[in-house]
Image (cartoon, rainbow, N blue to C red; front, side, top):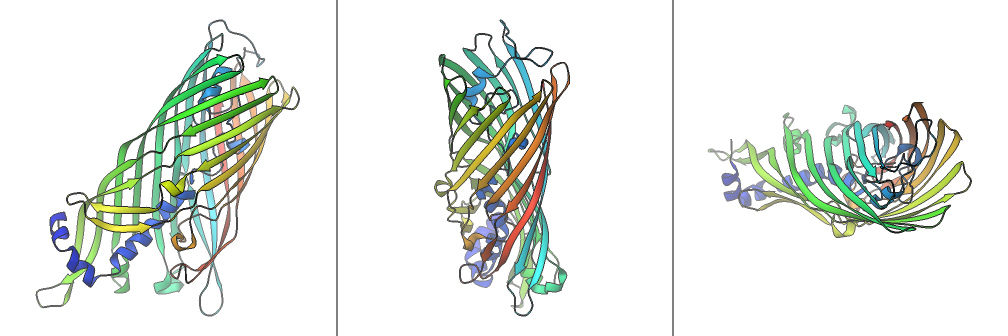
Length: 447
């Protein structure tokens, strides 16, 4: 087994003899980075039934710590029959949700001869993604605080091409996520204006398992493994909530850029000269670091109470990926030497989200929504393991009072990717016509 010191001392020799190693590792890393640049943040978001729109919402079924913390001062109080009420001592609220999602990505490869449609399954998440928050709003609504846990971005992809493609077949098994915890407070500065802020801390990780491309060319089985994780990436979310009149409100929120210094190991195989001069396969296991930077996010939205039963709201979100995802570097932990430098040149991502709530009666609320998200990566950084076409989602759901003040929230979403054609000269490795569709189910309770 070759240690990291040996790797550092012989890096120049290895690079001369296996010049494609960095290229193949970079290809292997594309799926996890690309999805961060397009979630990229989870599609749809929370609440699921309204496409995640919530920057200016104040209804009790919104997720304030995730969306706009300033709105916590205006969460409506409810009594045991589901009607709005007052509480001189304030009120606690619990809201939790689980998301289950899947996505079918269709790639029509550009190959000599007849075209071949290849369908792969990619799961957003982890497959079951939880989110929840506890909030307390004081009776006079001048102060509120809360705690929340959620996944700001998350992706899991298992992709395998048909064996009939032979050496052209690709395989990816990728997981990446940032599981975040946040604590926030909100204060009402004026009867019409509230401000709020939260502190964010998370655990980020990135795992990769794929066949080693060098050994695959020789017909020898062997896997490359990258496993890095770290607790940290502190950040802040700052929000403002303004209600100029009873039926109209505005929300603005800004989440700062964050920084993960992930640590772990890289296991791979390389070819080195043997004692007789012939090439020899050597297993390499070295400690590495990987720096990931969740980007700054600017959000704004409004809500209109069209009638006593109907609320309509809309958000615009801007993800500053050009400041964080231009390149990714895997370094040897001991020496700090760059083993792989991956150039991404990611685009800034823009997302438009619209939703609504209709109170059918005192115990039933209907949800609906729609959203569009732009693509986040150029053609050169695109691969079959990256769902990065941009696209639309359409959502619906129902919120039902079960008993007392216990409510059940069920939301469903359909996700439709835009068609995207990738080809040489920008991307000679993964040419094809990409598209797909998927779905998401969200189930939660609120008390």
